[in-house]
Image (cartoon, rainbow, N blue to C red; front, side):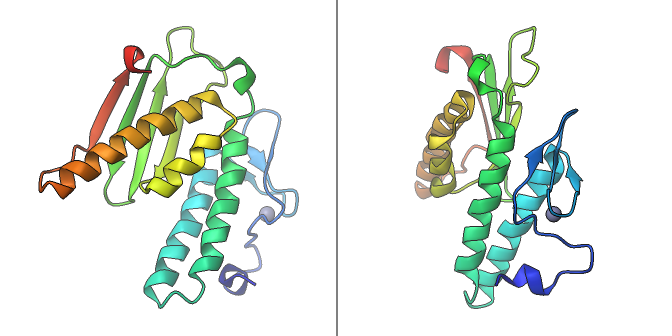
Length: 178
Ligand SMILES: [Zn+2]
């Protein structure tokens, strides 16, 4: 049993059954009925990442368990984010910003007008090669595109840092590079 079960309060639910998209936007947990918007789902993933990191610092006791929970939550999030990809429109621009404090890449996806109603617009990805690679298998072609560009940027930042330089914090990919 994962530690989050132990620290649960009466109202705390880890949404073990996943989250379902609900009409009108957002998602809901079939167990507790909680409704989460996209930002809250991202927070729910981040919570598991933070617990995993804290577990690692505490001696790695339940780090592996938390890593699995991180993967589970991300999978739920990616599936929610990527329902309408059948008609995915090619982005016009992708902006990637590295958030040092959270250790993530925040990606914004821009489209030519008219913007697709359900197109992928933002994505936060943990700044590790492994997390970026996870996205390569995503069902949404635009999420895969973001992951390719992220890999490029992540690699560049790594090379610059290793060469003793200051790695760039942000990068814009224009249509010609996508
Ligand atoms: Zn729940």
